[in-house]
Length: 238
Image (cartoon, rainbow, N blue to C red; front, top):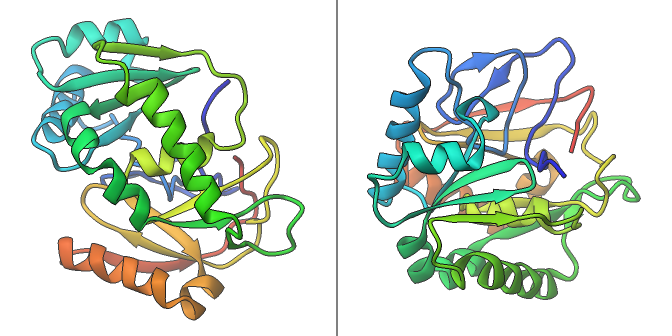
C-alpha cells in the first residue's frame, strides 16, 4: 500500500511542494520535500533538524531518500525522532512533540469528506467518530511504540489519508473512503502556501465555514508570509 492521499495530480500542471518549489506535479496537501536543489543527505538532515526543533510534529519524505532502514541509519544522530513507515510511505516524527500536543492537534482539525460517492466535498458528518478512530490508530502504532524505526504493514485503510494529514498537522484534512477515486476533480480549491507546507480546501467550504476560515487565520498568524491562490484540477489522484 502506498499512501498518496495528499498528492494531487494535475495534467499539464506543475508540482508545488512543501517548500514552495515547482516540478512535474502538484502536491497541495502534503509537505513532501523536493530534492532537486541540494544533496539528498543534506536535505534529509535539514528536514530532520526542523522536526527535532519542533517546527512540526512530522514530515512525509519523498522516495528518493531511500528505504526506511536507510533513512533511520542516516538520521541516527538525531534524538527524539522516529522513522515511521506505513507501507511505502515514510514519515519523520518528533515523538516527544507529538505525544505532548496530539490531543490538541487532533481536536483543532476540520475534516472534509471527499469520498467518490459524493457529488461535492462536504464537512465530515461523523467527525467525532473519525477523530476517535484516528487517535486510536496513532496511539496504537506510533505513540505506543518507542522504537526508532516503526514499520506498519497496514492494508488499505479508509482513514489513512486523514491520519497522514493529522500527523502533518494540517488544520484542514481530507478523508476519503476509496483508494481509487474522490469528488475533488474540477472542484475549485483554495490553497494556502507557507515556507514549510501547503494545503488546500474546496473553495465553497472555505467561503461558507467560519471554522475553516479561522483555521486559515491561525496559520496566517503563524506564517505572515503565507500566500493564497485558487486552482481547479482536471485530475485528482488519491
